[in-house]
Image (cartoon, rainbow, N blue to C red; front, top):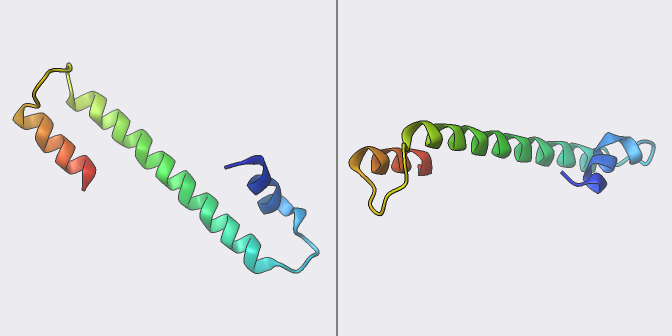
Length: 70
């Protein structure tokens, strides 16, 4: 998240009565954190499944890429 969004969600809006905006920003920050974690897991799994780069994907790699995409 950006410093701007962090400052908004950390309380700079307190006292202004905009609880709905604070809640929205918190949800969006959580979504971004969740997506970042999923990308980390995908990278980790990809490194475990793909032994070395080649010009063509073998069946195991194709299967893994299908699972990661969907």
